[in-house]
Image (cartoon, rainbow, N blue to C red; front, side, top):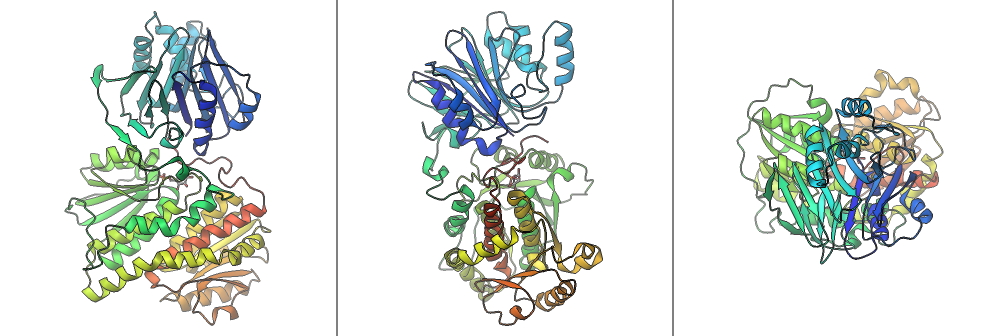
Length: 593
Ligand code: BG6
C-alpha cells in the first residue's frame, strides 16, 4: 500500500506535505513525490525516501498540493513510476493508493486517442482519463473518470486553475483533516495529527471537493455528511519517544497495551468478562487473518478449544477466497491490526455473503474492517508505526484471552485464578524488558547466521511461527518455524552447525517431548537457544544458551515468549544494520490483493 496526502489552505503547502508523508512512510517507502500548484502544476518525484526528496526541492510558496509515498505494485521503484502522475498537458496531477484492475484496457483506448504514457503504472491512466473528459468542470470530469475505473482507489486530484482538491475513495482508506481556513487529506491519521485532531473518515463511493474553507462530499451524486471524529491520541504516540526505533518503543509499550486492552473487561469483584458484544448464536468459530495476526488466530484457536470447548477453524485470509468450507452457524472473527488488509476485508465480505455473523478485532478506529463486520472489538495498542507488528500482536492475544474467558465453561476458582494471572501479566512482561540485555546478547549471536529454525509444541507452536516471521521480516535471516515433532519428518536434512535452533520450552505437558527433540537436534550439532521458564533448573544441561522468562500459567506463556521473540530479531537486525522500522519490500498493511 502507499501513503497519500493533500493540503489546501493559507500556509506553505510543501513542508506540510513532506512532514505528513514522512508520517506515512510505514505504508510504503520505495519512491515518493509531491505536486504543488502556484501558477502551474509543479511535480517533484524520485526513487528513495521522503527526506531525500525534501533536501532536493526548490523553495516555493504554493498553498495547495498533493503527495505520495509508494509501495510498488505496477512497475519497479523509479523516478518515472513514482507518483504524482500527470496528463498530457501536465495540468492535472494525481496521487493514488490501490490497484486499477482495468488500467490496460483504458490505457489502450486512450493511446489510440493520442495520449502518451511514460510509466509502467496503473495509476497513470487516471489523470489522462480525467483530461479526456475535462470541459472546464473538474468535478464532473473526475466523476466521469471514476465511472470507468474498476478496482481499489484512494486518490487526490490537483489541477491548474482550480483552487480545490478532488478526492475519492473506493476500498482504500482516506481520511480528511478538518482545520480552520485549511483542510488536509491523508491515507491515515498519523499524517494529520501535527495539524488537527478532527478527522472525517471517507466511505466507499465518496467523492469530495476540498477547498480551504469547505469539505463537500457526495456519494452516488447525493450530498452526504460524514461524522467528524476527535482522535483520542496525540502525535507523541506516533513519535519514537527517545527510542532508536519505533519497533523498540512499541515493544516497550506492551505492559501498558496489555493493561489498556483488558481494562474495563476484568472485574475485581466477580470473575466474569463482558466484552459488550451483542451475543451471537454460533456452533463453531472461524478465525481469519494475515501475517502476524494469523499467528494470533492460531493461539486463539488453542484457547477457545481448551477453555471454552468451542470447535475452531483458522484460515489464512488470502486463501479463504478459494475455500469451499461449509459454514453453518459459524461466528467469523477477522483479526487485523490496520483494519485495511485487502485479503482480510475480502474474506470478511465472503463470510457475510455466506450469511455468517462477523466480528472484526482491530486497532484502528474507522478502518474498513469496522465498516464491513457486524461488530468490532478494539484492541488498545494505539498507533503502531513499525512495519513488524509487536504490541498489536500481544494486544490481539489479549483479545483472544478475553473472548475465550468470556465463553469459557469452568468453575469459579479456575476462572478467578486465570483472571488474576491475566492481571499480573504486565508486570511479568516488564521484568523481561528490564532484563533486555540478556536477549540483546543472544540477538548479536544470532546475527552471525544466515539460516535458523524455531520449534515449539502446543500453544507455543504459533510462537515458533511468529518468531521465525519476525526474524525474516527485519533481519533478513531465513528462518522457519515448526511444530517440534515435525522437524524430523524432513527439515532435519537442513540441520548443520550453522543452523541455530530456537526452542521454546514451556514448563507444561510438552516439556518432556521438547527435551527429546532438543537431544535429536544436538545429535546433529546444531546450536540450540532455549527460551525457558525461570524456574527450569534442568534446561541448561541440554542446550547451548538459555533465555529465561518469568514463570506463568502455561496458557499465558505465548505472551511472555512473544516479547523475547521480538527482541531477539530486533538485536540481530540492529547488529546487521538493517532498516528495522521499514524493512525492504514490506508495508505496514497491504491494501491490494
Ligand atoms: C503485513 C505487515 O503487511 O500485514 C504485518 O507487515 C501484518 O506486520 C500483516 O501482520 C497483516 O496486517 P493486519 O493489519 O491485517 O494485521
